[in-house]
Image (tube, rainbow, N blue to C red; front, side, top):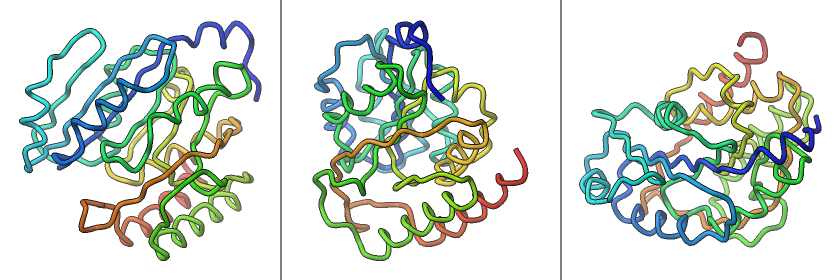
Length: 240
C-alpha cells in the first residue's frame, strides 16, 4: 500500500518511544545514542519507566524534561505493551519509532528505518535481524523461536516477513493510532503485527545490526512469552 507524496512530505517529525524496566546499566547510554543518531528531522523522546526497582527510575528523575524529552513513570510494572500505550498517548510526531532501553538495537540504523516512509514507499517499517546486517550470534533457541513465530505469522496473515518479533518497528502515526491495542507485555509484537497486516498494510523490512544480550545481562523475554505470542497470533486472526 503506497502512500501519497503529500503524506510523505507531512511525515517530518519523529516520536521515539522508549519503554524501560530495570535498565539501570543501559538507560543513560541508550538515551545518549538516540540523541547522537544521524537524523535531520525534528524529534521527541518519550521515556516510560514501567515500575523499575533497580534504580532506573531515580536516573530518569535526574534527567531534565524538555520540549523534546518527556518522562512517564508507572507506579508498578505493567509490561512493555502498556508502556508503549502510555507513550503513544503523549506522542506528537508524524512518525512513531519504538526503541528498546537496552543496547541490543543501534540508533545509527534510524536513517535506514525511516527512509521507506520518508520516500513514500511504506507506512510501516520493521528492522530485521535476519536480513544480513551485522550482528552478534543469538541464542539458538531464541533464534529458533523467533523464526517459528515469524513463520506462523506469515501463514496466518499471508505475509513474507523475516522477523516479526523485532524490537525496531516504525509507523506513520495515523496507522498505529487507528489500531486498538490491548496487550500489556511482550505480546505487543504479535498483536501490532497481526492488526497491521489485517488492515492491509504491507510491512517493509530493512536489515539492521543487532547485539543480543544474555539473561545474565538483563534479558527478560522467556520461552513462556513465546507461547503467549503464539496464542496472540491465533486470537487476532479471528478477532480484533
